[in-house]
Amino acid sequence: MPELPEVETVRLGLSRRLPGKVIRSIDIFHGKAFDVPEEARKVLCVGASVVEVRRRGKVLIVDLSTEYSLLIHLKMTGQVVFVGEDRFAAGHPNDSLVSKLPDNSTRVIFKLEDGSHVYFNDQRKFGWIRLVKTSELPEEEFLKRLGPEPINPDISLKDFKNAYLKRPNMKAKAALLSQDIVAGVGNIYADESLWAAKLHPEQKMTSLTDVDFANLHKGLLDVLKLSIERGGSSNHTYVNADGVKGSFSSFAKVFRREGQPCFTCGTEIIKTRSAGRGTHTCPTCQVAP
DNA sequence: CACTTGACCTGTCCGC
DNA sequence: TGCGGACAGGTCAAGT
Image (cartoon, rainbow, N blue to C red):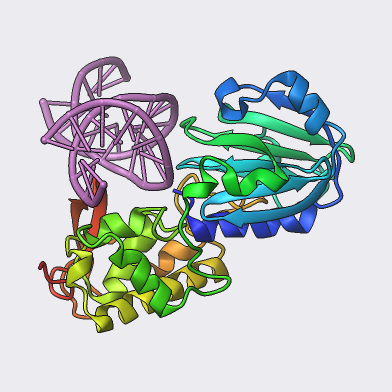
């Protein structure tokens, strides 16, 4: 469930700590999580230092001094947790995790020269780490299919509308979840932005008016930015780079609020299915087409 | 070709 | 208490 704001929060945490640090060794407990031959890992990762931590859509990009980059996709239950060399010191930011890591969801451990560790945990084993030459990232299988970033910098309303109108027959919820139209939106922020724009998830993109597009554009950008400010959502498996939960869900207007009153009109929020996903709407504010 | 659905996983929760 | 089954959701392969 890590979506753009959660991945961005992890990125911010890692970018405060990793640059300059050198990888000493890599322990792999689940081969599919980091499917790179040992020889390549030794040459391209071990001994390399971290140059920069970036993000594209929901993917973390860790540039190494070898001119190769690690791509990390957290999928639903992935975590990247940094534990400093002073992990047993009082007041360590992830005190509570110290005794728990590694745990049974730990798939890969990056051990750094200074004694710190980066844990890649993933309960459901959907996440992956890839190693790609930095200069070849634009052609990388996953990255090359991603649509534009919605924020940083903000996508213009015109580009936003044009992107979605390329898929005119798609339903709004399915379109928002499509990473090739606009990258980074998942189930939480699809529901939240549709509620903000007062649009029904089953409404086809062609049926949206200019005002609808303006509302959806603003609704999505606002909710993504608010969530980043709050450190991401507080889904049960999501934690930031320090192993700490976010607080966004206390600000969610519809997600996981079924049975509770709509903040606009008081009608009970309902949960249905759209695009194969649990979908939360206000049946009064978001009228079916 | 455009779009929808099911599989991939595992832990959790619910009803019996 | 234990057990089966539904459910969670990002992405891709398979299906319509």
